[in-house]
Image (cartoon, rainbow, N blue to C red; front, top):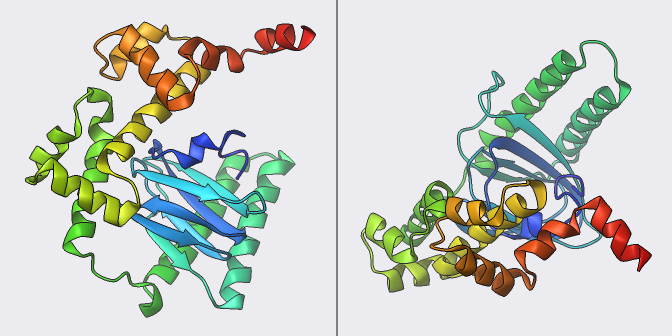
Length: 262
């Protein structure tokens, strides 16, 4: 899980989506998760499947333990087409999943020939385990309320349009409701207002681009729909407490060495 978050809590705690499918197997600790437009509790022996492009956020304690499997979008492995959160109570089924994940981890670490083929075979078995659990009566999700459906539709729109620079009024218009109603419904479903969710997605993208690429800040600002580089700088400073140049320098090994030397 620490590798999945790249050692930075914001990588998981800010609402965002990823371009690949993700399966997380929690084995210890508690937490909560934004997924499918709703806030959910997390606990031991929870399996969470997050399709590519689905908005999510995860908050966990320091004692949590989880394994994360990522699968490229477009993989031939059969996978669900929507998010799923399964609470596994059967100890035999828990052990089965743990064994499947550990076998995949061993294969990855051994560096033998045809590792990729073997990993795909392991993932296919894990997919079978996941889909077997999904069809059980205990895991069939309850129908969404009208508010939950609206919140889900909003998060789907955010994943597609967050870089447009458009305000929450645009999303409300797309969904045929008032901005006030949208914010109230999203707050009830996720614990965050619609503006909060949209802001988190933009902050996550900004930090990723600043810390993981060399694109000029002005280009990043334009890519994320900001009217000016100055406005982008103020936005980043307000929501991270740091300037874009400081965030960029935080991951520069040479700058870290100079700072430590002083």
